[in-house]
Length: 188
Image (cartoon, rainbow, N blue to C red; front, side, top):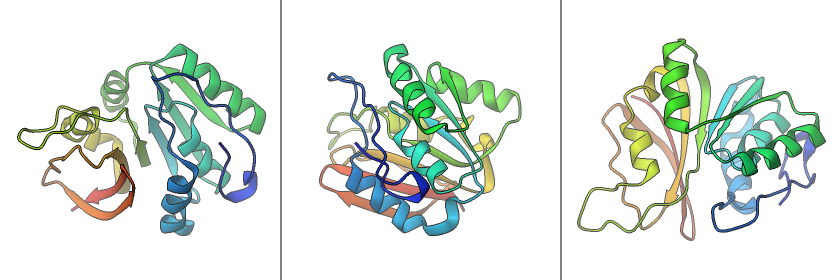
C-alpha cells in the first residue's frame, strides 16, 4: 500500500495483517482525494477506525494542518505509529474505541474540519435497518458537535450495507468502487 498523492506520493505504508483489517484500497483513496482537490489543505483532520492511518496520512501528504487518529487495536495502532514515524508525520494517535473518543472530544468542545471513517463493513441488510458501525456512527448524537459547520464527513461502507442518512446530512458525493462505497457528507 502506498500514499497516492501529495509530497509523500509513492511512499510505502505498513498494513496490519489478518482478517480484522480492511485498508481502504489505493484506487479508492486516489479517487477520494482527486474529488476533494485542494480542499484538504490546512484542514484539521480526525480519522476514526484508523487502522494503518492511510486516509489521514493522505490528508497530511496533501498539506492538511493536523491529523488525530483513533484506533481500538493496539496491534493496528503500532502499524499506524510506524507509518507516522517513517513519514515524520505530525499526527496524534489514540488507542481507544471510536465512539468513546467522539464522546470525549465532544465533551472537550474539540472540532475538526474533516472526519474520516472507513470502519469494518456491516452485513447485508435488505429487509432491516443497518446495524453496522457506519450506521452507528451516523446515528451518534455526539458526532455532529465535533465537525465544524463547513466541515465534511467521509464515511466508507459496503454496497450491501444500506445506510439511513439522518436529515442533518447532505450527501456531497458518493464514490463507488466495487463493494467499497465512500460517502462525503456535509451539514445541510
